[in-house]
Length: 282
Image (cartoon, rainbow, N blue to C red; front, side, top):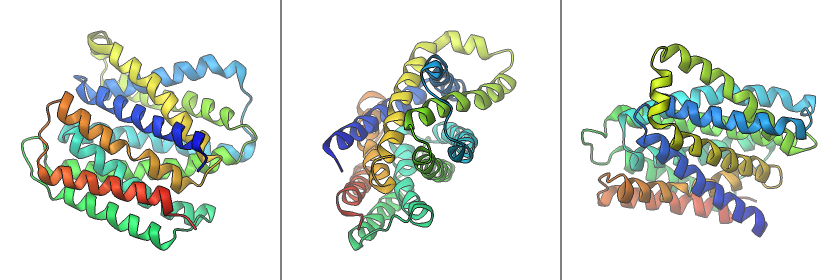
């Protein structure tokens, strides 16, 4: 991986962990994730005059990704309602590289080396350790299920966007249009589910959510750009090192408990994704 690409994906990992923490601390997680999403759509709206319409070949991926993102936001909100950031986030992000590797092999011809297979095994062990870790009032089994479903949607839209970004001549066209189209479905759904309370909730804490939206645009825009230049499995794996940042935020800033088992599990996941990034491709 080129040093610039490596640095940009690593930055995206940090930004992604930060905006997830901002969603976690918001009083209403559905409204928070909607504001993050809508802020990204507003940024994209401002950028539309400066980009072209993506090539027709990329539109199936573009629309498919927008649909999958809707499920992603739903599962993410459910995860944070049932579990701690330092537990939910590593499971969701740790599951994604394995699934991306499968999707990249099936649809893009990207193959894992024996080192890559070993990395997948490490990630699986880390996820299992997190799932079987100590459970308290905020660590129910349902949080693990929702986190794994979140990971499935992450992998699905990652593969779609990796293919979509490669299917158009200018990847920035795809990025801007994705954020623009992605903002409408969730906003409409939230207005229905939170009718009568949406504006009140927004006024109570919109600043952090809007900041999260700006971070999300930069973070995922960098990821799509990187996947247009580098194998998807590389990018996904490096991106998921954000589990370390999220764990640190959860413990030190959100005051979440993190026993020895969760420390070891997060380290195992991180070791696996780093190994996958550094030596996982043929």
